[in-house]
Image (cartoon, rainbow, N blue to C red):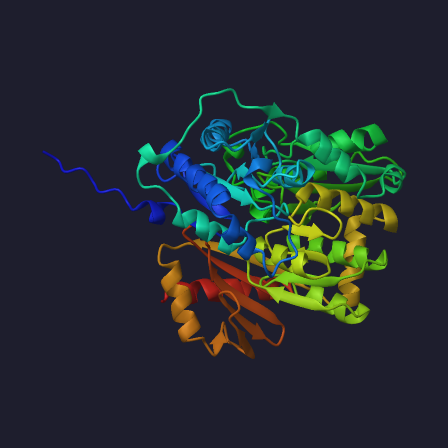
Amino acid sequence: MTERPKMAPIKEVVKFGTDGWRGIIAKEYTFENVQRVAQALADFLQDSKRERINLYRDWHAPFRDASQGVVIGYDTRFLSEEFALETARVLMGNGIPVKVCDRFLATPALSYAVEYHQAACGVMITSSHNPSAYNGFKIKAEFGGSAPPTFTEEVERRLPRNLRKIERADTEVERIDMTTPYLERLKGLVDLDLIAGANLKVVIDAMHGSGAHCLADILKPLGVECVEVRAKADPLFGGDNPEPTPQNLTPLKAVVRAQATKIKPKQLLIGVVTDGDADRIGGMDDQGEVLTSHLCYALILRHLIEKGGVGNVVKSFALTDMVDKICDKHGYLVEQVPIGFKYIAERMINTDVLIGGEESGGIAVKGHVMERDGLLMALVLLEVVAKHGKPISQIVKDMMKEYGQHDYTRNDLHLESRLEVVEHLLSNPPSEVGGKLVQHVEDLDGLKLRFDNGWLMFRASGTEPLLRIYCEMDSKEAVDEMIEAAKALAHSI
C-alpha cells in the first residue's frame, strides 16, 4: 500500500509575504486554507482589541471594532469570486458583518471601500501580478493600506489546524457596488477639465485584469478618445503574467503603434497599463516605447512638485536614482524603505508624505487612500501630458536632458536556491561585476552594488521562486551588459 505524503504544516503553507498570502491554486491555495485564514482573521479582529490597539500605538491610524465589519473584493482569477464568498461566510459565521463587491474589483477600489464604509479591515482575493496559477489573500488594515507585518503575524499565529474549529454561516452574503464610489473619488483627484481639453488619444491596457473599463468610464464622457486593449476578463490573462513589464506589453505596443498612424492633427497619443488587480502602473509613449515604472514615478513626482505639493518623498530600495536628483533640485526630503508597500504605507501614516512608490509600479499620493493605485496614476500621467501639451516621448527626453540618462531593466531568474544566492552575496559581496569596480555596497533589502555609472541589485522574491536582478545605468547597452554579468554571477553560486 502506497503511503500518503505528509502535508506541510499550515504555517509553512500559509505565509504572508510582501503583500499578503499567495499560493498555487489547488496546491497551497485551497478552500480549506482560505477558510483557515478567514477564521484566524476573525479571531484576531474579535479577540484581541487590546493587542490591535497596541499595534497602532506608534501609528497615527484609526482603530475600528470588528462590529464595523469587513469589506471583501476579488479579481478576475480562477475561482476568485468563490474564494471571496467563502471568506465572507467564515467571517459571518463568527458574527462579523460583511459586504462583498458585486463584480470583480480593482484592489485600490477595495482599499477605498475600507475608508468609504469605515470598515474594520478589507480582504482582497487576488494574486496581483503573479502568474495565473496563483491566487492570494491581501488584508487591508483600517487605514485602507496593506496590513503591517505586526498585523499579519498575529493572523498567522491564530491559524487553526483543525477545520472543526472554523465557524461558517450559510446565510446569503450582502453584495454591493464598490466600483462607482471609487470612480467618483478618482474624478475629484485630477483636473478633468485639463484632460478633456488636451486632445488626447489614450490606449488603455487592463491586461485582462480587474481594472478593465474603469478608465474608459471616466474618460469617454469627457470626450477623450479611448482604445481599450485586453479589457475582457480572463483568468489566464491571455497567457502572459499580468504585470506591466516590457516583456508583457507586446499587445499594447502593437496597438499604440497602429494608433500612431491614425492620430488627428495636434492629437497627443499615450498608452497606459495596469496589472492584474490594477494597483500598479506602466505606460507606453507615442513612439511605442515602454514607460517603465521608474519613468512613471519620476514624471508623476516632478508633476506634483510643479503643482506645489508638500511633503516628503518615499521610494523603495529598487527605485530609480532620478527620484533623488529631482528632490535634490527642488529641496524635497527623500526617504528610502525596504521593498513592500506596507513600509511605504507606514511612512504615509506617521509622516507627511507627498508621494510614495516602488519599482513594481505601485505608487500612492497624498490626499487619497494610503495604498498604491494604478488607475489614479494613469489619470495623473494624462494630466502630465495635458499640462505640457506635447508628446510624452518629448516630455521624457526633456526630463532625461535635465537629470541625465537613466536606463533600467529587471530580470527574473527562476531559481529555487534564490535565498541561498542572496545570502551568499550579502556575506561575500563582489568587488567587481562585468569588469566594473564596485564603489559602494547597500543592504537595506537584498544587495545593491553601486558603480560609477549606476547600480545593480539582487533580491529574492517574497512570493515566487525568483531571483530578481535590478539594474539602472546610463545607457541601455550598459544595462544589458551588466544584467548578463549578474546572471552569470548568480548561476556560479
